[in-house]
Structure formats: structure tokens, C-alpha cells
Length: 559
Image (tube, rainbow, N blue to C red):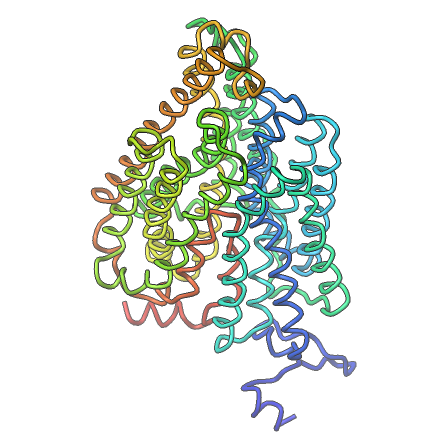
């Protein structure tokens, strides 16, 4: 035993009175053999890859899905948004479930639910069943995404954890970049259903490795209870607002006072009330999903505002840009997928040097400059002379990728620098959940704007042909329809420009120099977190596993 302690740096197993070993909760990686570490890494990569591919590939398939199922604009908004609704609502509670029921078990359940949801999406005969299956995918993603990085952090010590996360990140980035072209090719050449079917092999492999090659271990700490009340209120709040806005997008001739008497107005009101009650509940909850003390920091709040503004623009435009490329400008789905590769190239290249950039120019300047670059990209999508060409689409996504490559890692660093070290996990989880919520509200809100702009520009054609359903038109009618679709997209472009400009202003004037402190968050693995956060990643439990137990004491002494 002495030799073992000397070689490992501490006791690998604590012995009970009965002679049985118990897991080392202070240094959990000591209980893992090399083979099991590799199994954990492989399972985490495979499980997360499903969510990354799904997050980018499905946006390319919305137009083929609408054509194949005869879905309305409202149906398409539900297909795009209900996944994000459950992901945003349940993401924070996903980490608590792992601490309560076991992280390996929750990860396995998440992979299983996501895989079954993917199968249901692929065989869905109607849009209603597809919407329900997308909800199941969202629930699965909310369980597996917080656990994937946590399992890696459990299995690897501090010295090797960065390399393991780097491998995981590289594989995930590759899957994210391949999502649009793969999704476009499958939707155009085979069927949109195969975008969902391709998730299943990843899920089966991840489940097999998890269940057969890893063992269950108790988490380092177990919460007293799970904040189910907060989770339910989050679902009601997000769902009520989403339902109201989607219903509004399909409502014609809206009266000024109809908010008080309509179904959509009542749904939005219920959603707002639920969110208000959620805030009150979280302030008094014994184990809140979102610790209220974090929101006492004006810096934390400012960074969250930047997050919601820029990710709202990102989430909304990613859904509607492929539609306008197909319906207004006549490009095939696979051509659109190739154009979206322009986004991935600068993200991969610039993110690798983001730590150096932050040291040279500062976090605040990177946030502001990145937001303004995104505004330029949105103008390129719908205002510049090249906007209606596939080359213009590629260049627009390239500029957008540069902007997000500046914003994402700086945002992660800002969140960590604005909060105490023992709150990094909770702060990151809240920030990720707000990004998902902003994406949800942007999708349904953009649907309302698109519907009204389309009706105004399309005239008689818009009264007969629903948004996105004019594929069979020809001649003068087709030209009017395409012009109306393009005009509706330009309305969204200006909204995105405004959101990006507001994000730059908040970063420039409401984030002060205290955010610039240099700390471990500028290391490559944290830069990669920033890149991946927009596609599903939520390292919300990192505080349990990647902090020195004495760090808070040391920080206090240094202060």
C-alpha cells in the first residue's frame, strides 16, 4: 500500500471496516485503469457527436422536411425550436441528476433517449410525430451533454485531462464542421430522414462502450434534492412563450388589442408569469438550478446579456438562412451545406490562437470586435450585392465564423473571470442555458417577423402560398414568391445586425477592465469550450472536478 500511495500521489482506494474498497471521491481518477479511461473518452466523443451533428445538420433539412411532410411555417418552427426548448429548460438540472443518480447512468440514459428520439424522427409519418420525437432528442441532449465532459474529468487527472479534453474537442469540432455538408448531401441525394438515422450508430456504440467497458461510481457530492419545481416552471415559461409566438406567426390580420383576447396572447402571458415565478422560486430554493448570488454581479449579468444577444442572432439566422438560399435564390440543399463550411474554417483556425489574442487585445475588445464582425456578416447575407450567390453565402459564413471565433472563447473567459472559482461550473451552466433560451426565442420570434414580412411583400401570392411552400410555382408567380421570401429574410438580417450591434455596445460600455484578469481560463481547453458551447456543450459540472480543493483558501489569502 505504501508503494501504491507513493506512485499515485495518494491512496487509490479507501478501505472500509469490512475490507471492501470504496471510490476515492477527492481524486476519482485514481480508481480508473488506462483501458477504462480510453473507454470513457471514446463513449463521451461518440455520445456528444450525435448532438453536434444534429445541431448543424437539421437546419439544412428544414426545407426538405417541409416539402416532404407538407408542413406549415408553424410546424417548421416547432421542429426547429422544441428541441432547443427542452435542452434550455433541462440543461441546468441535468448536472444535478448526474450528481443524484450517478453520472454514468445519466449519460447512458441521455444517449439512449437521444438515440430513440432520432429513430422516431427518422420514421415519423407526420409533422406532429416528428415534433414529439424532436422533444425527446432535446431531453436526451439535456442529460448527456453536461455528463460527457464530467465523465472525462472524472477519469483523467489534472496532468492528462487537458489532452483528453483536447482530443474530445477536436473530434467534436470535426463533427460540427461536417454536419452541414453531410446533412445537405443526405437531404438532397437520399432523404432528410437519414440525417436522423445517422445518429443511431453513434448512440449504440456509445451505449455499448459505457455499459460494457466502464463501471458505475458515486459522484463526489450528492445534492439534498433536485429542483424539479424550477425545471417544470422553466418548461412552462419557455413553452408558453414559444407556443404563443408560433401561433402568432400563423395568424393573419392581427388586431392591435388581440393580445388580451387571443390564444397566442394568453400563452405568452402564461409563459412570462411562469418565468417570473421561476425567478422567485430560485431565490428561495434549497438547491436552486441557478444560484441567485451569481446574479448579484453586474459583470456576470453583462456577459450574459452579450451571450443572449449574439446567440439569439446566431440561432435565428442558422434556421432561416438555408431556407432563403433554397427558396429565394434557388440553390440546392447540398450546395447550401458546402457554403456553411465557410463558418467552420475560421472557427477552428482562430480559436486555437484565441488565448494569445486575449492577452494582446483583451477580452472586452474581442467581444466587441467579434460582435461587430458578426453584424458585417449579416449584412453580407442579405444586403451586399453578392448576397444572392453561393460564393456570397460562403463568404458570409466565413465572416460570421471569424466573428464567432472572437466572441465565443472571450465569452467563456469573461464568465470565468467574472465569478468566483468555486462557482465556475454553475456560472458556465447558466450562461449555456441562457444561450439555448436565446436561440429558442430567436427561432420563434424570427418566425413571426418572417411571416409578416412575407405577407407584406408577397401580396396575393402570400395569401394563397404559405411561407416556404412555393416550390411548385413557375413564371411570374414564382418570381413574386422568391422576391417575397428574399424580402422577409432581409427583415431578419436587419434584426440580427441590431442584435449584434447591441452586443458590441454592451461589451464596450458595460464590461470594465476587471474582466481582463489573466487566469487559467485562457488555456486551450477553455478556449475550445467557447467554440463548442453554441452547438450543445454545457461543461456545467466542471467545478466538481477541475479545481484545487484549497484554491478558494489560497485566493482568499492572496486577496
